Image (cartoon, rainbow, N blue to C red; front, top):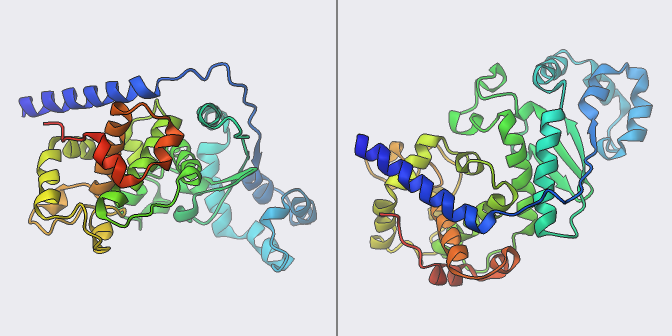
Length: 319
């Protein structure tokens, strides 16, 4: 166990150093003034008589086909008021989150000079976690009720591998992912290796946007799962190679190794010990290796064919 612990520490240290060398940039001189509009507070604390004013200030949140009676009912609904009161326990003051988002946007601006920071609008979505952050050019919507902490009673019916990402620290991660997806070209190849590298590209862009954030947050793992992936990378990679999966176009492989899940599906007795989407983790390491071994920009990497990235990455498992 002692040797295992030392090895894991060394591996994580080496990976961190490699990543830092390429993505260590100075954004201190980038000016950024972030505007945050608290629609959630305005909607749930104002009397129903204020609805016309709210519709005038936030027209993009009030579809014209929805009658006012629906909004009036929502403003006073007991369940929604309870959900709002839960969010206020954490987000009555949004200063820390505003500071984190401001720094994130500085890094985005560093890599994409034409980027204009969006106006951030906070709201509640009845825990619509699949749309917890929506980026629409000049506006960025954040559903605060999806970031109440993994122990919140609101999430008692959610599986742990999903709810563990419902914390305050995951707000900037979810925003970075939404911004990164906008920069990701569609993959042309459907081979398994191309698919995992597509996920790796996304995670690498998140590396660039969030260079100070731990890997576990970006991929949605626990620290123990990161350690498992680092320690077992040789065996997993051997499994992919020996079973001729890398250049397979079998779509089931996405469900087994790329999609978010409680564990990856090798169809072995100890599958439950593995983290989900292990293929995405490998794609991430391949893209990191490619960037370390090739003199290319972030934008050039994104435009490079995924299978070419694999060939030029010189990727090898850590052991």
